[in-house]
Image 1: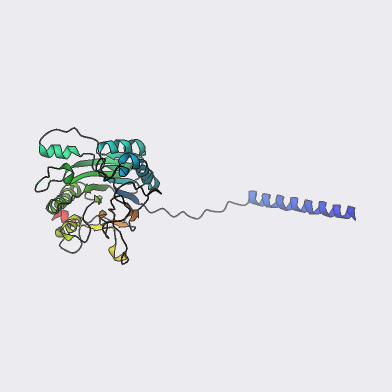
Image 2: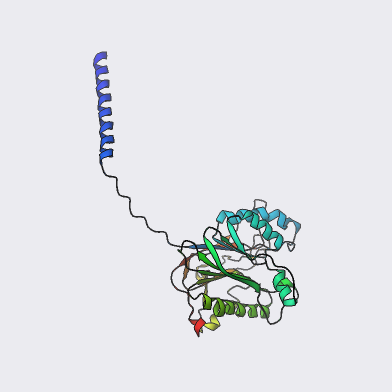
Length: 329
């Protein structure tokens, strides 16, 4: 019995070896299976707007910049947007961010204070609206920054509207040229209305004339939500189009907001938004399609937030030419 069992085991072993050898031989002689054709990824742009609150203007010592700056960088790097539009970035804050956001280039740099009231105001907060963009993806081909001149400049520099503007070219030619305007509209209504008109002039009459095929994004802390038409309608450019649609469209789709759902973005370091509607906005030209914006509510377990605003992240997809007919009227 033992001899027969051993013979059977040897036979089974030999058969397994023959089977494995046959599989190996077939695999060597058979042509490789063709890979399914890959579906090209749709080009996209990720962009974040972040009012980081100017150092020294925090309401309490527990919200001071040195205590929240690491969380702020951690939040920005976690989502890794291709473009970051900051507001409230003072020189000390920008110096820290330049060191820690080392995959990004940024605009503008710091200017020297000089000149009359207007030039001094314009240069006092040159770093106010910083635009960071991934160095290995974009080339800066044009830029501008300064004071958006209202009817009457305010003596308090922080109560004026400033802007930074970059025109970016995609190194890989997947995206069209992009005009990014980063701004912080102020609280005073007349000044805000004047500044909103001027921003449209900057985009429509200057940069769209230079770059008529570029897609545009006006981004930042607008301090006025869509329920406040005097400023909002000017920001989206409705008067220049002559219809209920403006030259720019808001990427927030308010029809999707559930009753009682807060989309507010200013929360005063509490995590509780003070308005139901967002005031940190993406206003984009036609030629972009987009995902719903994501309101970033990241914070520490102890309740510390990176800023008094929730940051907002959006993904945009080029889908056609910009709407620029009003430019040539």
